[in-house]
Amino acid sequence: MENNLKASQRRAVQYWFADGLVELSSGAIGLLLAIYFIVQQTLQASQGSFALIFLIVFIAAFGIRKLMLWYRECSTYLRTGFVELKKEREDRGLLGAEVGFSLLLLGFMLYTILRGIQTVVWMPALGGIIFAFIFGLAGFKTKLLRFYFLGAFCLFLGVFLALSGLGDLWGSAILSFSTSLVLFAFGIVTRLGYLRQTQTIAGQTNER
Amino acid sequence: MNAEAQPTRSLTGVDRLIHEPSRSVILAVLSVVKSADFLYLQRETGLTKGNLTVHLSKLEAAGYIKIEKTYRGKLPLTLCSLTEEGKQAFEEYRRQLRDFADGGIENSE
Image (cartoon, rainbow over all chains, first blue to last red; front, side, top):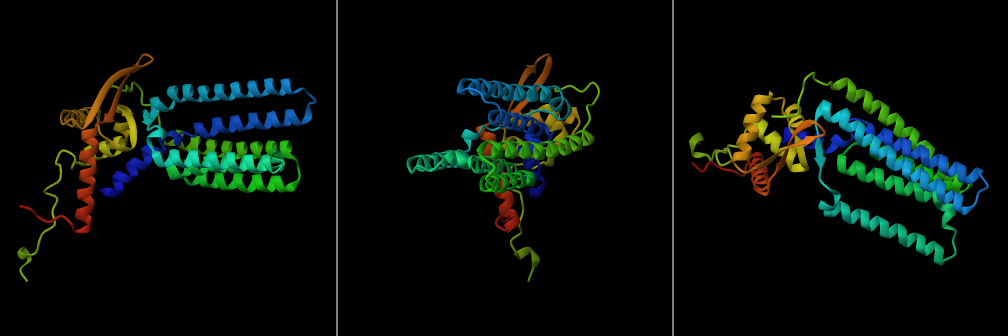
């Protein structure tokens, strides 16, 4: 019985990722980031232009997230119901980990700037570490193995690209593009599995 | 040795309202999320609408859960969440189950 209860709790915590839409939308955002880095590398434009491109990418990423939430309302919530997860700030351990990691990263960047080390050369590695932390945290919270795999993938690829001498922008572009491809792959597999296992029941209402 | 002389482990002390498979699943789900809707709980418990309504009403009457009826767009939505009293009752129930499994609870009757 205890195992059944734990399984129910685990499914509820994993529900946010059950339909694959998070991976698909995150993959799209990763693709946008990759395009941004490629544009920055290849175009000879002013700083103002890059700020504008970044703003467009940021707004587009925001739009993708909104689109994902809207589609989830039309699809997932009608098929399998709605679950509102607890806010992260209610979990002091996770909040502490996030604050600690942010401070560590900030400290590292300050150290490199003060010591005259070019932080920007390590951008792919830093990106890999940040992605690895985000996916690792998601894996820890949900106990979904695919996030641990994604975290390890980003970490190793980020460090490899930083050491490869490709440069910060090409390295970051390849990191973002590769991560988005893996996210798309996971998203498609998860989505297909979800659609196969669930179906909208005709006339189904969410009312007791 | 007489078998009756040995302390018999039992679950007589547990909350009978929670100690029902469907209701314990409902509380288990609500204990890890902020809220869940009727459809999700129905799929998770495998109950019919009528049965789930009865179980939810019992839990609500005991003050263990809060039921809020709202709308998302034009669709009616029944949201359930755990109250503080429900949280404590469920934690105590889980503790008693663990104690029972470990051989900690003995027959008090």
